Image (cartoon, rainbow, N blue to C red; front, side, top):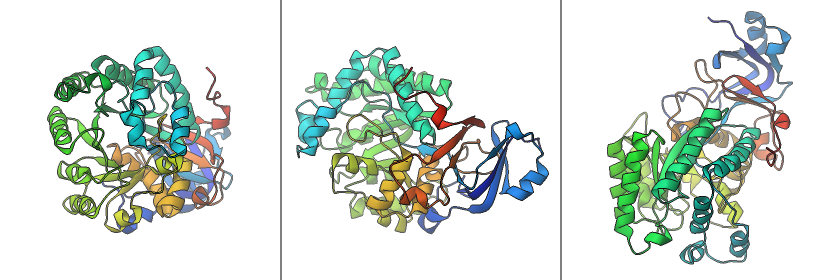
Length: 434
């Protein structure tokens, strides 16, 4: 066994989320946290070396005090995996948000050129350097809340140059670290206003840009917003099939405003994840359940985004309990974006999931860690505290894991460890500072 270079000790609970590296947790296993009381973790070269009781690991690893981190009776968790964000953007939509709070429907705003179109205009006008500077601020906010892996979508350029610009920013963020970045090409977010009467041409543009994205290795996944005011089911199937042939993993914005049949299509095509699902119907649920039953290791992960309904004051939430009871693996994500979910906080999402979706705190933690990792294709790399995995950990200033659901309005992350590097959130530069 190699020598440890970091030892984290004295956790009241070490929440491992272990045992699901090859396939996501589902059904009753969704709440199986794998807790070690009085736990500790040994790290070597950025990887988890050993987990166990503090007394045992202290006996086996004699490290100098500057390589020992005391959890002081807090809770150690895997780093959060935020499996759905739109973190690269320009501008804000606070005025639009106030209109929505007064009852104006989102699809009406979208038809009037607001919503995504508004952010598209701001993002197109921004330079790559400006987008990078803004994205760095949001990455610091994510990191401070315990996020160690983040998925970042394009989708606010909606032309070749600006979509590539966004993905270049995502690649730069990943290169800078410390948060690991998984990029997704979302050229099929909506049809931009300059292609309003040329839909077929825009589909061609999405495909030609996707080919270039693949050639330049700028994104791992391809996503489509399948919805009444975005892309039809037939258009979505065409685009996903094209992307699959290029080697992309598939994702899908589905059943957010209408039961469109998108969840069934995602399951049929073997999508890695299907996201939103506020309007998921019985047929879509059955299709997702079938996708899991046909695969012992894969199956489409349902990524739920409770911050959207909260931020917009909506009553409709996805059927989280029915998904879990059907054996569909559930993940959680922020959907960080300037329109419908303006938050980088995975702890807040866990809080909302317990209150709005009916998940237990344990189910929410699994959804925010190992199942989130599977939703971005990294279940074997991160999302749980097991030997060999990347040392992505959070030391939380709470006495019990249930506080993640019980408490709210403050950040529980005392220390964040990314790839073995120890980061103290309170010492990070302020989110609005350079």
